[in-house]
Amino acid sequence: MCTSALRLVCVCLLFRTSLSCFQCFVDVSDSLRLCWGHIVTENNVRNVDACFKKLDRIFNYHEKVIEAGRVGRGYGEQLKKLLDAEILPLVKEFNEKLNKDTVYEERLQRAADNFIAAASKLPRVSGCFPPCGFQSAGAVYNCVTCQYDSCEFPLDCPVKDINATENSRSQMWCEVPFHLPGDIQVIWRVAEEVKTQQVDQFKEVTAGLDRLYSIPSASLQHQGTYQCEIYSGQRSIVRLYFFLTVTPEVLLGHTELQEIFDLSLLPAGRLLPDPGASPCCILLSLPLLLTTCLTALFLLLFLSLGRKGSDFDWTFSWSQEDNDGADDCYPFLSPQYIRSHWTKRLFV
Image (cartoon, rainbow, N blue to C red; front, side):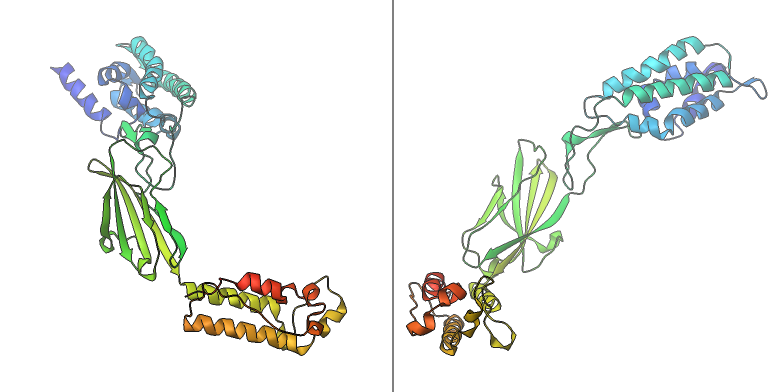
């Protein structure tokens, strides 16, 4: 009767704290046999509770022991073999024999050091790929919970910005760097005109196996955040987000025209000379400058009116005298450059 009561008390003491590598792999009966003969030197009495506190300090709360136990999936059995190799000989040696606490301290600490050294050589996590997604294949063993943990990344990935020109094709791929199960389902959703990750703002657009979402001809109405969620059975594995910005073609044409002006003109209305040109080039006649400005104004007028230009061919007339040296000094002003650069460059 007394033996049964003592066993019950010891079991309660052993599990009063959170689990650890020691309690994950060492049987309760072996722990009781190990601590049976623990003698506190100070008062020379047998104290099993003091032995369990010693195990807590040396194994259960030891950060290096816990870290050494964080092995990759499939190596938990080897972890148990390493710990058994250190503890079971002590259990056999100390069973129903009295030993002072100093002996326990020395032998248990040596066992813990040997376990840390051996377990640290086992393969670590088999592969975690940040920054998001439930990755079961990259799990590590947790000596606190006695089970494998996932990579502990959030389900939602950061928003990826995508830019597209109006009337061009835009594509989004629901791809992840980690392994996916074979029974996945892909759901695409969209939150129009906003950049967000709040799930209640999205509406479903497609569901199936297709991890590619394609917009053949992007328009301003397509702007917004697109969400791709991958499921396996009833479990959500990852959610990817894409924010699509569509640039109007007219705005793009205006931007290109502004770039021409920035490259062509300096303050006070003087043309930007070519770095290798001779000083005489800055004395080009005024008609050449006026022709350039009028050309740009006509282009801006057509763009503003939305005039369609599919096969426009621009020609200019200036005197041969005005043109002499212009091709060398200002190649961007030559009729050949303007004709080739601006043919078919007008937008709706």
